[in-house]
Amino acid sequence: MQNLGNKKIAIVCDWIKDWWWAEVVLEQFLEIFPNADIFTSVFFQENNSIFEWRKITTSFIQNIPFLNKSHKLALSLRPLAFESFDLSDYDIVISSTSAESKWVITKPDCLQICYCHTPTRYFWSHYHEYLNMMEFGWILNFIWKKIAPKTIHRLRQWDFIAAQRPDYFIANSKNTRERIKKYYDRESQVIYPCIDIEKFNFNEKKEDFYLYVWRCIPYKKFNLIVESFNKNWKKIILVTNTDNKLYRELKKKSKQNITWKLNISRKETRELFSKAKAFLFPVEEDFWIVPIEAMACWTPVIAYKKWGALETVIDWKSWIFFEKQNVNSLNKAIEQFEEMKFDFVKIRNHAKKFDKEIFKNNILDFINKRLEN
Image 1: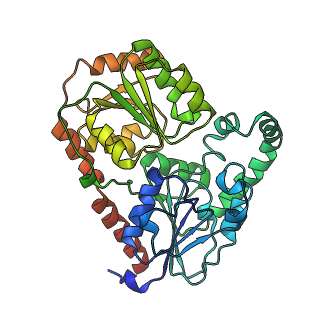
Image 2: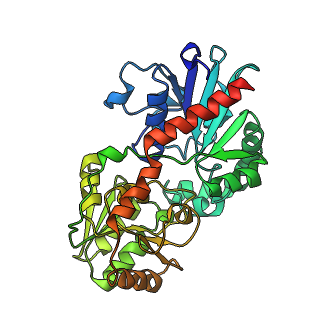
């Protein structure tokens, strides 16, 4: 076992703005490496206590008004931003990324590891979907769609080259591991993300509402949830921190049985997890830790049967699957759910397999083995 306390370590991430589940992984890295420095394109979490006393280096994008708050508009700048970081003093550099932070350049004797949440979506797997969901206004949207093919082609080539820089890849799921191989031609080891299991209360006495939590963007399928519950008239609470055009349109379309909560705290969200009778997982995700948080609260999950959902499933006693992303398929699964009984203890025990102590041990074991080689 190496003495990592003698190593100078840097943690690199794409951006630090909102606080969602990629940031939970960052938080765990900071617990594992309490003396690590942070490098990121932009930083807007000044009041978050986990960053107190941390050395945080931001890129030149931090000082560009408007662009510093829009990672889409700063797309062509971020590769340059990450390549500009001087990491020559560090022994170990770990990027936690779904975008460009793996583009950093390190010295030859530095151990560079990429913890990959997914290969950059808007370059690869979801390029066309992102192209059709720009929110810059119709003039900028029109211009972007004209220049995007050539721009993204160039950035895609750059992304592939940059993906050869890390010495090792860690994938957050088996599905991500397959994408890393497909798009980057790199092998990777799977280490699942984690939750702090002790922060989640469990309660067998559920209230009469369903729950969905995430950013309100097209591929997260809030539209499917609203359409389905407008039809079935069952109660649901939708939680998001995204106040955008789509959010406002869907909120306006929602009937009285649909409640929206905007920008609530993580504590309030955990309370909803413990009270909901089921959590909905309607998206195609590489891996998603949110259903694990629901299960930590003894809450069953109704999930779209694809990708990340298949890696967190226990069996039919804990989850219900629906086959197609449409109203009829989802509502049929909800009807099936309401006829079933669930083993709540088994659901909670499964969530314990994703506890943060397991994640920490796996990360340290991975790094120590590479240092010994």
